[in-house]
Image 1 (cartoon, helix red, strand yellow):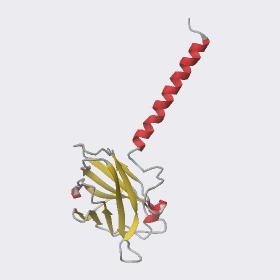
Image 2 (cartoon, rainbow, N blue to C red; image 1 turned 45 degrees about the vertical axis):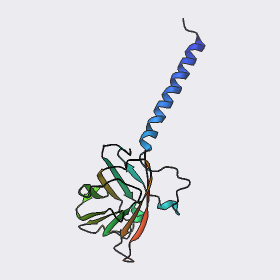
Image 3 (cartoon, rainbow, N blue to C red; image 1 turned 120 degrees about the vertical axis):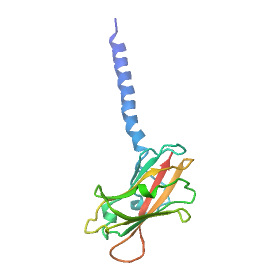
Image 4 (cartoon, one colour; image 1 turned 135 degrees about the horizontal axis):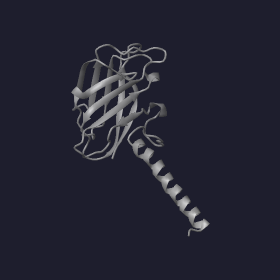
Length: 182
């Protein structure tokens, strides 16, 4: 039959393999979202690194992607009448302006205009009604659907600016999304 030590070894081996499998799954899904631990990012203030989520995050595929670029409520206290997302010149993916939306507190808001300026490497989004600010602001998510990722993987710094309803009329930097495509 089986000895006590062989059953113990088999049980320990099974638990070890199961533990590795279980802890490995969250890491796979985590890889396409928030950058996690970023030690050297090039972004001066750690609080300026914004959260994001990519549906696929794979470069060079024919599969279209979805980017969810989040702006936390504390960055929206002054409200916004326009959002601008700029990206590096070496990012050669393609956006579909008809498939871009703004979600406030999870609800989609009607848009007046979305323009993609390929030469200046930016996307401008103007909601029909300004997004109201307030003491705590409101969490905003810029959703880019039907995105064609670049042919090669890499790290891409997307910068977010808003046209605030209060304060200076100049565009205000809200942070940077550090996107990693495999």
